[in-house]
Each structure stands twice: as C-alpha cells, then as structure tokens.
Length: 110
View 1 (tube, helix red, strand yellow):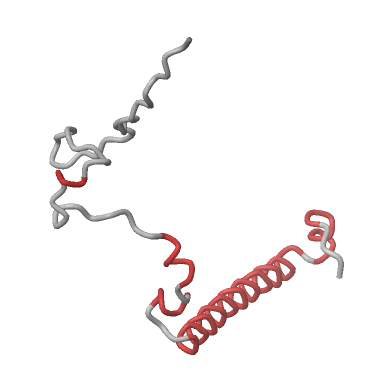
View 2 (cartoon, helix red, strand yellow):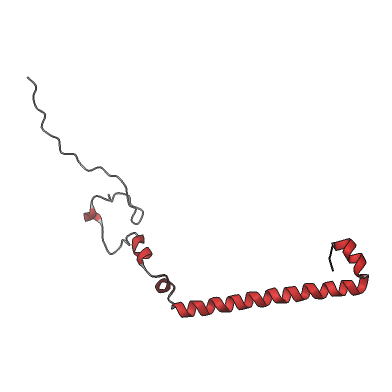
C-alpha cells in the first residue's frame, strides 16, 4: 500500500532579474518591489508596425514626394555635369592628340 504524496505547490523561481539602480534583488515575479514610476517598460514594437510611415516621419506624403523630386533633380544635374565634363575632356584630347592616337589608346569608336 502506497501513501499518496500530497501535491507540492511549485514555487515560482526567479527566471530573470531586472537591475534597478544596481540592485539585483528585485525579481520579475515580485512586482511589489517595483516603483512603477522608476521603470520604463520595454517598448511595444507591435505598435510601431501598425503605425503609418508618414505619421512616424512627421511629414505628409506630398512633402516627402516633393523632397524626393528635389533629390532626383539634384542627382540628374550632377550626372549631367559629370557627362559634360567628360565629353569636354574628350574633345580637348581629340584636339590635342588627334583621333587616331585616341582610338589606339582608349579604344574610342567614332
């Protein structure tokens, strides 16, 4: 005949320790230790994803599109300037060395 063991109540163990002002006595399972004003809780990242991008950037869609257009315009201008500079230098070289030399050197076709 076996004696039935009375079910032992499992005590919660300290899973993780939160450090508040350098003390690690405060268990995560004992919120009575916490002064809730001192603790900033972890950010809820799910809220971030549900938020609108424009809301997050504090700008409207129109403003952002305008900025993008300006950026593209600037980039295109830079590209155009670079191209003109390249062609100018090519022209200068052609004047200086003649076309045949350049074709031999750089492999320029017409």
